[in-house]
Length: 469
Ligand code: NAD
Image 1 (cartoon, rainbow, N blue to C red):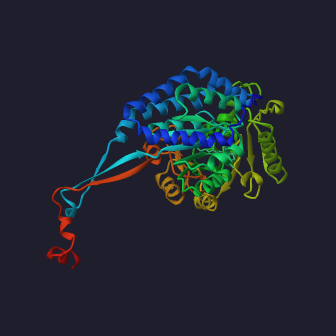
Image 2 (cartoon, rainbow, N blue to C red):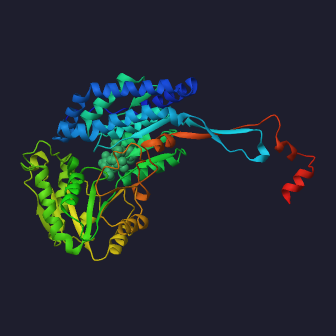
Image 3 (cartoon, protein in one colour):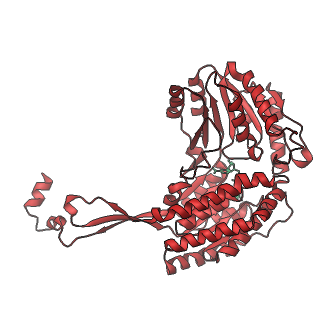
């Protein structure tokens, strides 16, 4: 982790910035399409201009995160999302004509998506660039102003984000606030017009409670344990490779990483072998020697993950290590846990690291019941070739999103909403849903010169009798 800790923003400054942005929003009104597109283009250009600075800062903050991985998992999807917003926002901004019933002819009705005003954005550390700047770009596309609080645990990256924002926007349009949980607490107590929080479920509940005091609507992008279900007898090589890809990207520090696997008891050995092969294929020179393997962010998380592995081992799990660790560098080689029981600590909390527990079932219904007995996950992954089995799992479970026969990639689909449900979140962004979340649907009715409704006023005539009969 970096030593460069930027100074926290004082709480008096938070209210001042909000006041400044709100006054500017009321004074200038919503930006038109050309202004929104220009702002998004400037943001995109500044991100691209500073791409090396960004990937270096990420490497500093994580201790090791390859610049190529950062480009693939953060910069490319981020730039792609901004391009998508530039392309589609004009269409979403169009007023939408609505039906007018016979009584209210010859009036007209339509809906405009009005920007809500000032959006507060709180971001986590695991994808600190994209999870700060995709929400920001969405807020800009929706015509809003925004205040952004990135994570204190990635200080070098947060400093670059602050620089990018300062270079592109005046403070009355977008400003960055720096600091830890105390600043986060003060930030979420501000009377924003919308708060978009990405982080843990525990903190999400605090943010929702703080926002409720101001009746500020929230979008909560939270975490949880995302299961993988493998159909009995399904082919294992590609399945294991795709699960390893999802689990080992960013060393498992991904909100939608496959958290645990549910497979048929007869498939466990086949999967274990295929997963080890897949791990070796991804990093043929081992994990300590691979420049493309990301370190665990800090000592706290490294020790937490080591503790989960030791606890599982002590309780009878079979621990398969796919390589050597380098604790001084926080490099934790992938671990596969077999014979896992639901009582183990590794099944009680979101893992958020390269540790993959495997649980077995005899009938697919048991896997479905297992998922439904737990909080609703952010993502669900199903691997299988039988339509009936797949539909059964899809119909009888609830999750934020789904990727079939793969992992993570629903996130990269610009035209799909992304969000959780229940404990994994509330609301969604990406795609048109993000624009909808950060705008108010203002219904407008324009009364015509002649209108049947005018016959509904006293003195009531025959038409009223007809209607009330
Ligand atoms: P976190 O909840 O600890 O912190 C997130 C942000 O909230 C940080 O900026 C932090 O400073 C701030 N914060 C902390 N306490 C606060 C408080 N009391 N009030 C207001 N703000 C506060 O999460 P994290 O450790 O940074 O990130 C990991 C978690 O985020 C995991 O659970 C992961 O699944 C989840 N996550 C979810 C998504 C998603 O899109 N759904 C994406 C990435 C991460």
